[in-house]
Image 1 (cartoon, one colour):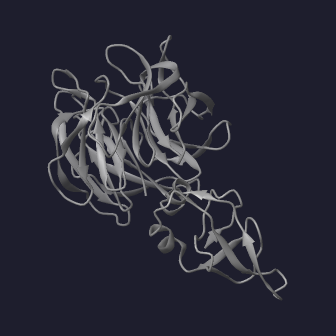
Image 2: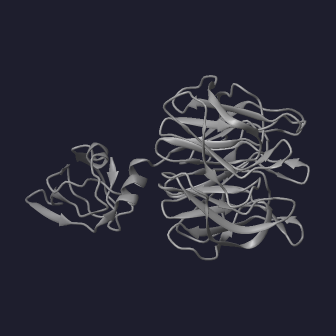
Length: 374
C-alpha cells in the first residue's frame, strides 16, 4: 500500500504508465500500486523526477491522467528507506554493563520488547544502521577504565544474539555514529590518554578491520550525530569545556570535516541526535551556563550553514539518551537526569514545532545506549 500526498513527501511511482489498482480516492488515499514502486524507484538515478498515474475515477467510468508534483531523489530515498522500528542497544544502569537490545514500534505507544542481546555488554557506544542490521561500535565498561573497539551487529528481523563484525582501529568510548547506504562511521570520542578526532569507517557487507576516514575539526566526545544521505553531521560535544559548533564530513571522501553553523546554546553533553531527510535534530542535552539538563529540541538544515533553531521541547529533561530516526518523527530513549536513569521513549514530529509526546518505555532503564532504526 502507498499513500498519495500531493506534496511529494511520500512517493509512489515514477513511471507514467504505472496503474493504480482499484478506485482512485484522491489525496490521502491508500492504494495498491502496480508495478511495485520500490522496485521502480531503486533503479532511478536522476535528481529531479516528474511522475504521474493512470487512474480509475471515483465513478469507475473513465481513466484520467492525474499529474503530480516533482519530487527530489532525496524524498524518494526517504520513502523507500522509511523506518518503522526503533532499537536501543547496550548501555548501563550505573550498576552494570548491559547487553540488552530493545525494540519498539514507531507507530504505536507500547513498552519496548526484548530483541536478543549484544555479544559484548558495554555503554557509551555509537550506533549505525543498514537497511537490515544494526551495528554498535566501541564503548567502555562501567568502571570507565577499559575501552572497547568491537563492532557488534544484530539483525532487525530476528531476535538473536548479536555477532562480531570486526573492529575499529582504536578502542574508544562516547564516539558519534553515522550511516551511509553501505558503510558505518564512528567519529571522535575518548581514548586512552585523551580525546581523538579520528573518523573510522567499516563496510556493512564484510567483517573486516575499519579504516581511517579523515578527522573531525577538533577531537571531542559526547557529540550529537545526524546524517543526510551523503554527509555526517556532528553537533556540540565535550572537550574539557562546552561547545556550540556543528561540523560535517562527506561519506564519499576521506578529508577533514568542515564547519556547518552553530547550535543556539552551549553544550557539554550534546544528547541524542536524529535525522529527517532534510534536517538534523539534537534532543535533550546538558547545557551551560548552568549547568543543567534541558528538554529542548533544536534543528538545523543539512543544506545551509546557519544557527540552529528551537524546535519545541521533549517530555523529560535528560542527557545521555539515544536517538532513533523515523520517516515523519524522531525518537529518543533512555538517558538520565542526575543519578536517576530513564526508561522513557518520547517522540516529536519533524514538520511541527510542538512539545513532544510520550511513546512508551524501554524494558530497562539505562543511559549511553546506541540507537538504531530499521
